[in-house]
Image 1: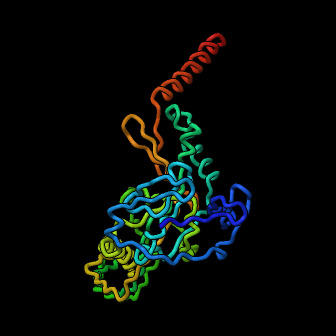
Image 2 (image 1 turned 120 degrees about the vertical axis):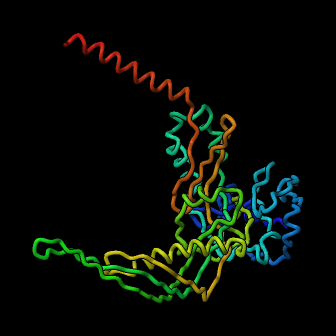
Image 3 (image 1 turned 30 degrees about the vertical axis):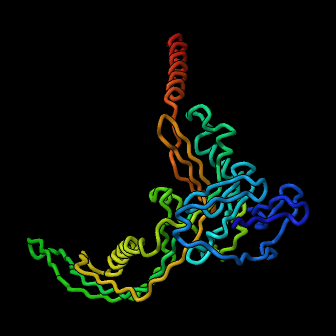
Length: 339
């Protein structure tokens, strides 16, 4: 089922306005608080049905669209009307929380131009109006993990004292067997749940400020693309626990202090609480194919952090260096008359 929000004033499609935090009609400029929107209470699809894909009809123009496997909101390919695939946002597939966008399209376009230095070395067309228009706001699936853990650490530590005794330098080494026990809590450990974007690139957009998480509500998606997770929490849990193990090691290394050297010989982690939440986080995204390579611009929609590497036109680089060389040659030539 497609969910959309018709303006009560003129009937046009309403979208979520990032700066105002409300639904907004671009046709008559009417606004609507999210609390005024009647919540959706329909039935959802099973995972197997989502994997098969479903045909949807745009409520605005009637155009037919076959959604991506995990797509949960999009824009109509024919009239750009916002379409929320509400039947894919139920049960375990409904996010618990969402981080709304803070950076709007204008912010993203300005950041994009600055990122590629206004096209100084970019291929022709890279910063064209059409390409910039392809920038899209997306909600990416993330998992937030929370752990309580009991940690036992065994370490070998030394205190080394160097002093003079008569004509001799004496080194005295004291060796200690150290045992520590901790109760540690780890909150809001993020992990990307999508296979469409590289984990390394998404990691460059972090950190997100999860203090600003809000309860998920459908209207946040109006006008943006989004997709459900490709990896479940149980599939990601081993990798997340490996990350926590590194945190514990770093903590233990710093907590066993007051010694010259510390060598952690053994650590045991007993997870007493394991919880997680499925959430959406905001990014601005565009990709560009140049000489067979795909270049991506990604911007954290909450704080503006950027990831990606712009394509470089070698011809423009050569022309720029040629111009610099010509100027230097002329300056040297003129300078030679004054020597």
